[in-house]
Structures are given as C-alpha cells and as structure tokens.
Length: 506
Image (tube, rainbow, N blue to C red; front, side):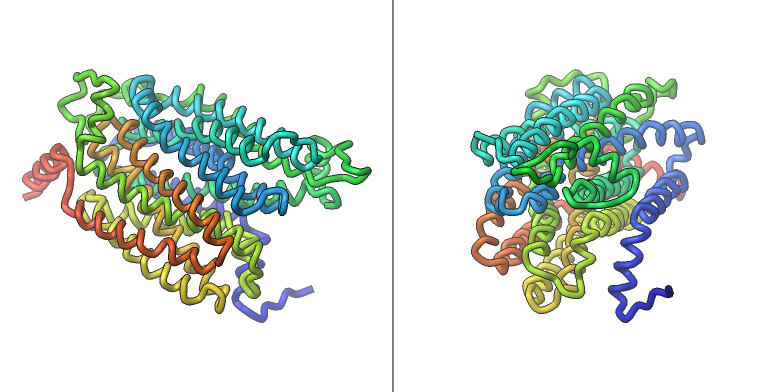
C-alpha cells in the first residue's frame, strides 16, 4: 500500500523511523571523507591513514562512553514514578559534579601516563559501574531495593562519571600529538561528531533497548535474544516486568569489546607508530624536554586568566547542552507535543545530526575564517543560542514544532562551543605537555555547568516549565561576553608559524 504524507513532519518522521541507522552511517562516512580530504600540513598518505586507525577506535570508545552516561535519562522515562524529575536531577547532578572534580586528579594523571592508558581506565571503570547501575535498576523494578534510591543511584552514577572523566582528556591527549594547531579545528569537529554519535547511541539505541525489553513486547530474533538474556523468569506478583536494567548492561558489554580493540590499535604519539617527531606548534613547542609536576600542570590552568576564561565559556556550554539534552526528553514525555512527536521518538538521532553540524560549523569557521582562533566562532554560537532561547520561551506551549527545532539548534551550537573550548582551545594554549590537564579542567567546567542546570532545573521545572528557557537565557549572554574577550588570542608558537607561512607565500 502506498504511503501518503499529508504534512512535512509526517515525511520526516517516516524517514527517521525507517532510515535512522543508515543515516548515522552516512554521517559517519561523510565525517571520515572530510577527515581524509583535509590535509593542510601535507602529511603522507600513510600518516593520515595511521592517524585515522588511531583516532577512530579511540573515538568510538568515547562515543559508547556517552551511551553509558546518558542511559540514566532513558531509564528515568522507563521507570516513570519510580524515579521523579527531582530525583533524576539530583542523581545526574551528583554525577556531573563528580565528573568535574575528578579532572583535578585525572587530568594531570593522564598527562603522565598517556591517553591510551587513560581511555582503557575509562572504558573498564565505566563498564563495571554500568553493571552496578543495572543491578540497582533491577532491584528497583522488582521492588527489592531496600536502600534510599537517590543515595544509591547517586553513588554509583558518580562512580561511573569518575571513570567517564578519563575519556575526554584521553582522546584530547592523544589528539594533541597527532594534530597540528592548524588542523585542530577539524579535529574539534570530529570530537563534536563523536559526542553527537554517543548521544544518539544513548537516547535512540537506549530507547530501542527499553522497547525491546518491555514485558509485553513482540519482535524478531533480536527481541527474543534480549528477552532471553534479561527478562526470563523475572516476575513481580506473578506478572512479567519491563527489563529496564538492560539499558545499563548492554553499553557495559560494548565497552569491553572496544577495550580489546584499543589495546591493539592505539598509539599515544606518532613516534610510537614509527613516524618522525612532529611539532604541532602549540604552547609546548620548544618546551617538550621540560618535565612538569602535578602542581606545574595545575598552574598552567589556574594561574592563567586566559585558561579560566576558556573554562568559563565551557561552563556556559555545559548549561546549554545538557540543559536541553537532559530536559527536552523529559519535557516531551510529560507535556504532549502534538505534531512534533518525532523529536521525542528520535531525540538521539536529531541531537547526533545537529551536533555534527555544530561541531563542523565551529571547527570550519575557526580554521578557515579566523586563522585557528577559537573565540570568534564561540561568540557567534553563543549569540545564536541567545536568540534560540528567546524563541523557546515564546513558543514553549504554543508551537511544539518550533520549540523542538529551537531545542536541537541550541544543542547544535553548544556542541560547537564544547568542541572549540574543551576539544581545541584548551589544548592549543595548554600544549601537548599539559593537554589532558587543561582540557580536563575546561571539560570539568562544562560539567559544573551541567550540574548547576541539573540541580536547578530539576526543581524549577517541577514548579513551572516556563523557568526552563528563562534559566538558560542569561548564560548565553555570559558566554558571548567572555568569548568576545578572547577574540584575538592565539598561542605564541602558532602566531610565529602563521607569520612564517605568510612570509613564504609573499
């Protein structure tokens, strides 16, 4: 029977329903093509290929860490009244604050042990923590959790987020040795892509896991396999229950697979892969022989007004990104969105696609329009977020479609900002020697922002959802103001390199 569409949103929903995984595959293929087609430093083909072999498994591990991070949000909707909005806000905030504080330890540690060991610690630790969260969810669903739900989930989610904090600093530490400053805008885009794909895994794959493990669901061989593994003989009062705990166990298993791949393929530096030494012209140029203590590494951040300004922008981006990522999913489940149901049904996919666009927009503008300065595109993206929060506030209850698009556009811009600040600017000004520490503190500030919004919006939205966009609004202005303050900043080594290139071309 021929499908007839009476409204554009019906066509969009149809495409998302039937082509989501293919579309993500296409997006990833485009990102890989863009990576191979962008070679401003004229590296050899083997270097470019070996660098891909290095960052792809590292990046996919990071993406699946995201699946093991935001699965809490998916589980909350499945648990319904067993976990309230306030409880989710408190649990998520406890995890994000732990994540932020952990960088004071893990950033300097990864600078010393290297990114490969760091990503292995992240994946193994998060896998174990997700197993424990799965056990807690199982006990909650069958009514056997005797301890306080908020306290127990907060503790194990915080353990999860402690190990998660090794992920970002590890991928950026490895990146700092393999990507020149003039290429890092593109890597920032790749970093944003990995974040976005991870969010897709968490929300869309996570929701599919929830759907396939419902007590009364039906399906094909994969449904039957999940039911056999997770739901067999689980009864409450003689009836089957939804096996919500599967949304924690499956990411844990996937992370173990990537640990084995990472052990085989990842190299911390080009030299370890038998390439000559590579000067990336960041803040460590000419200083690679200097050994830095933990205090030296921390001073690189906390004694630098510029790095603190970068961290402040990161903080605002955490408020935007997670303020939308976390709460639109809850809002749309609580307040019906007629005509815009596809936003909730495909939240992860939409965040993925728009996040990729945001990451590439920020990175491309930085490298091609602003000589690898990170402040100008961050300022433009903050200004865009300010406009979109006003749109959200105006159309919150009157136009579900406009609200949905404004929400994903805010995520698009905020991923671009996060990629530029934590993924790129912190490494440029921290240099290879302090890449993990500097990017870690900036990423930590991002999650301080996430914790602030989680605590705040968990309570404010319980009173009235109108507080949601109004809460985000002033932080957009703060981010814009600070980004303008760093508009002209570049590392000294980068300025020298650009001047030399300009002289050669003259």
